[in-house]
Length: 447
Ligand code: SAH
Ligand code: SF4
Ligand code: F3S
Figure 1 (cartoon, rainbow, N blue to C red):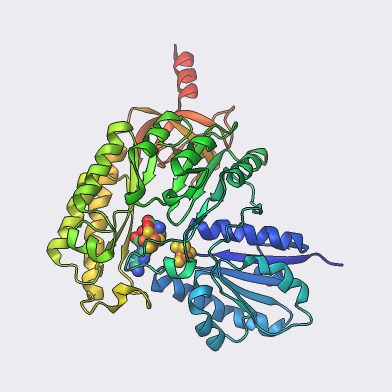
Figure 2: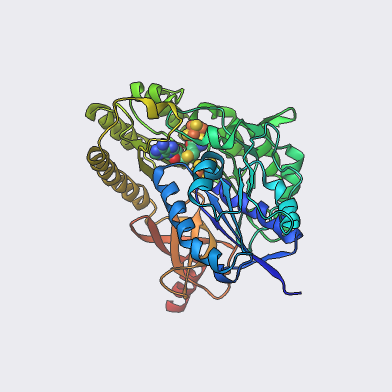
């Protein structure tokens, strides 16, 4: 019998990337192999995101484009997974009756049963119940070869920021066992991964009877063979000195924190329900850099939150300048039906949001340039990840601080090595340099 094939497309955050790998491993067990050719697939899954309106539009368009494929091949299984499935199952089922399966993020264990029963039950299959317990602790994802392995350590979010859909699409916070996570990390190392990124909607709210996030990080750092550890995304409220000290203690935990600010005005932060003030955020940045002086920070910002005045937006700019982030993900506020902020009457116009976004992007560009220029003349450790986009003769890799570096290949360097690179220049978000050993060789040759 011919091998069955599945195709999966992933939208949204890294949690979805991880979930797609979990779904992949379940499909493997049902005899399905992955394919990159959507036309030849027997099953197509879209793992969706609902964070902003644009994300949803992209999936709607993709589903529209799949209708003809499904018409020509009725036995094709078309599944919608993830956050939009959770949130918009009725809309999807009404407007796209050709979708066979709709599963929310806590229902992926149903996949084998759906695949097996498919012939008898050709009707829609929908399960979007949220669970208080599901953490898929006993499952190993099916990862593609690479440098970094994502490991989900907790799921859900209880923070209820007023702009955010995640608490509704992902449900309540729950953490995996330290044992389960360690097992998965050891397995990832055995499979050849050298970097681990611990994931959670609120990664540092991780809590089990055996320990909190600092304890977990401390244990993972001691697993042999892990060259680098990262985590994302933490909530500023849950970062304490203890956590930063654990980071400082282990050389394989990267000096890099993604610290979402969202806004710089106290009134807006309060309206967002972010639970910290501008000053508390700035103190946190100070505390982190007092313990790890070369810690690189990145952030997320929303501009044009309902009621944000021009002066309040300027406060965001101020905090962004003062925090010296080396990069930022910047978004225009997008109203999400069902969230508290979507009911606020003082929504900001699209033009105003666009203007604020552009201003902020320009400010951050300057800071990125300044932050990157500090490295010129310095030698940094770079983990080689892939060929550079420009040339097969050059490597592309990341520093501990999460900055991309491009440099000429040397004879003895290969993917997954950490090499010393002397930085010569910077352009945009990228640093350019030379491997130090080959620099020395050049000097010797000249002498
Ligand atoms: N749990 C993470 C965020 C996940 S969502 C955290 O708290 O940091 C990633 C980012 O999307 C958020 O940090 C926020 O900046 C942005 N975002 C979330 N909801 C949004 C909305 N309604 N409009 C615009 N951006 C939004
Ligand atoms: Fe959304 Fe806030 Fe939870 Fe992050 S912490 S996922 S922004 S509700
Ligand atoms: Fe999107 Fe869901 Fe992640 S809404 S950002 S895929 S948690």
